[in-house]
Image (cartoon, helix red, strand yellow):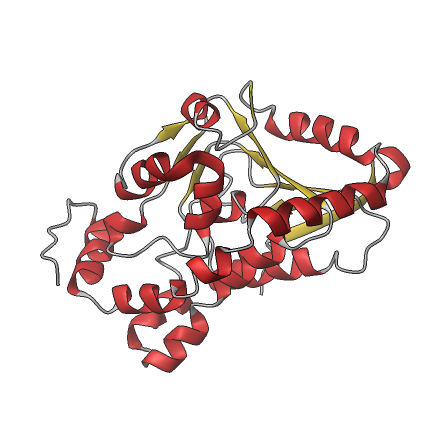
Amino acid sequence: MPDFVKIEKGLGPEGRIAVVRFDRGDGINALSPEALRQLTAAARSFEDDAATSVVVLTGGADAFSAGFDLKDAEGRSRKDMDLGALRRHLKLGPRLTHAWQEMEQITIAAIEGFCIGGGVALAVALDFRVMGSDAHLRVPEIGLGMNMSWQSIPRMLHLIGPARTKQAVILADQRISADEAYEWHLVEQVVDPGKAFDAAMDLAWKVAAQPPLSVAMTKLTVNRLAHALDDLASHMDVDQFALASLTEDHKEGVEAFLVRRKPRFKGR
């Protein structure tokens, strides 16, 4: 399998910063099932890493991520899976975002270009987001006849509130500019194009200079309070996604996307 993820450790004050680079080298950076596995493994590799206090996650120069790879052969095989196999396969995404949210280290996303669908789901699972001013976000799942899953709804709700969450998810074709994302509190900082990684590293240096144990314990406390009901609120994510994937509207949405035409949904 190609190596989509590279990890560099030992950066910054006392070597307490690590960088995770996700780059498929295609300018799109879609999340294939294999990419999901590699990114999950990257997050889990920090579980016993007491030397690292901050992890910066960055994509390619042109894209943080285009979201789930609808053209990937393994991903396309979902349409032929029975319900049990489908439910197991659909756990790849939630497993990814949970692994990044549960990291003891502070996590920072550096977003350039575009961040779409599953890319947004991953970004909102991190602690902070820094975005280039010419970048944009989009959540197209509903336009593909799917629901937004991976426990993204409660995470977005905490960040931007109910109305903005509905706006971002239901208006699936709407691009959310960097300025809008900042105004909505979806990202914490907007910088000049091409400078998101540098700004994320500046923030990482500030965090890494703080006492590591105090930082880790504070993150744990904030996350446990903020996300206390998230599992309850989104426990049906996988089953809702599986159900939606069996609808005619989902087949129509994906087909329309692949051939670049406007979908015709019928509510069945």
